[in-house]
Length: 287
View 1 (cartoon, rainbow, N blue to C red):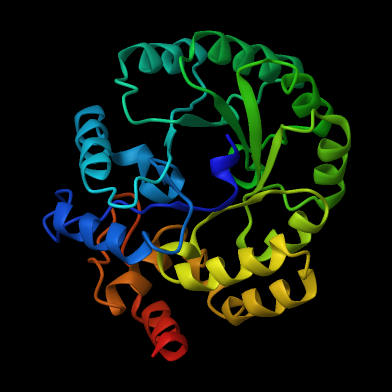
View 2 (cartoon, helix red, strand yellow; view 1 turned 60 degrees about the vertical axis):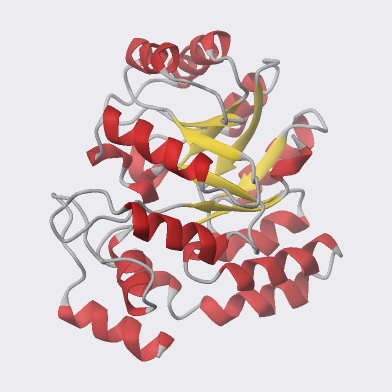
């Protein structure tokens, strides 16, 4: 899976003002990012996977496969806090065109680390493509501890982790104690050069939807081990990055894409479009 080095873009799902999926907007987004990113991540949190139906998910995936002009690898989000429900989804999924899945650590029911290991082991046993773990404690309320990731890395079908804990020491421990081909992927845009300096192979990025060329330049420098220059390049986005989360992801992101003429700023309830205040703050930066 060396093809997953570099920038993976966590694609938004564009919607029409009526709330329906906007496939023209999705095509425009794919064309906007295609030349600069290394792979596509479909139906992650940024894609509002919590509020799209199973039928919509399938149609969105097929549209992306059909309009993937650069033939980039596709990582598909399949996760949840009901282990058997995730396995059922896996069994019902057509994996043609999917290179791996990204599976979030169980949320809400707050399992023990042993429960998390059992959860992912069962998923990896059933999944016909490789599994990438996703640790995002700010959303799940439970950290996937380094020792847990190290244990799960022993499974032949678990190939990496998107690490969004913000804990650099934890990331160092993962790199140090997992097989050489186990992939540490940054889940925090602005921490990417730092994590790459300790062994990460790239990022699954939110802001690459809007600024793919910045991430392409950052990756080029990081792969040359010019981490200071890579950090300086990425710092171009330091002002806008917090605005992407001020009213929850992908509200700010879709507002930025709307202002750039790529897709509408429509999100699905319980999220609301960006407030006038946030919209103006974003406009001030990207104008």
